[in-house]
Image (cartoon, rainbow over all chains, first blue to last red; front, top):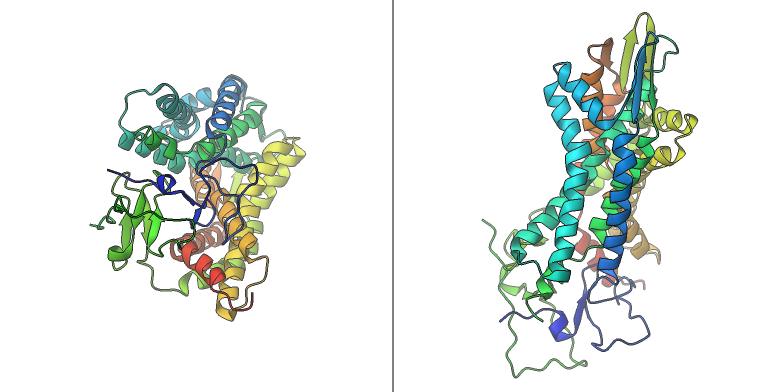
Length: 206
Length: 224
């Protein structure tokens, strides 16, 4: 038999980890943590609603992020705008397979995997997909760990547009997909942060 | 092998009233809300949740001054790391270089303001504020003086720490270096060394900063 903190009327502060008592009945007034004065709740309020909103917004923005040009490298007047995928293909063709793999993982595989995983986690909670809670928690930790690495492409753009800025000889310019991709990265970070993993384990208790 | 914390099971007849104090050794797992007691396990270096394996506590870092020292070193290194050129690129007699702050400014001028702000936050503002707050919090603990803003500083510290992404930036430098190798001469400039050292400071500071201890200091403050 497992006892959760909520079963005993205890809530863990999300900011400072202190346990405090919280009335089980939903009262109008918000209780605050005695140690750090953050608002207390048993579970993150509106966790799934926020996660769905961020996930849907990120999914829509994946389209412009992947189909619009993200980077244009011009040298001696020659060069075409590149999308994320064509950039990876060019890297691969110029014998830079390792870099191509890194960029592909950070810019394409990770954002898509994150969105798929968040949707799976939310479906487990909402329609009770029969998946192991342990494995779902591992997935949750995985998206938290991996999320920031999607910023790689954006940092690289910032480095390249500054480094290669030589007028007609060579120039690197960012494209409209850069902002869309940045929005995807930030929205997936928000989506992962608003999902409350305790909802998964609550399924065992109802 | 870290020993898992023992599962806390209250006897059925013991009713915790709202008046009774919460036992000191009681904690809840952040990921699955399992109620656990930590009494028997405090001598272990790390405690993991028996149900979902979340890290509950880590007391392996006894060297208490390292986080403070790393934060101060990080602050000293910050200005050169941000302003000195990171890479040099030369092609057909033309030269170019970049620094962290130039990268933000260049994007802003190319009317990518949103992107510029995001990169400014993740590569300049968040690392700086993170180090500043880590040093300030360390100073408060050493002087035993806790101003009313202390809890807010700690929360901001955590927020800034999650948005400080210099390690990803470092990977971006490597990728940019390899990518431009074929087009011209790329060389590592002094900023890279400062940035590597700053990164080391940030990692050390994260590793040795004890949040729970910082909160306990606030809870047990005497000048409240």
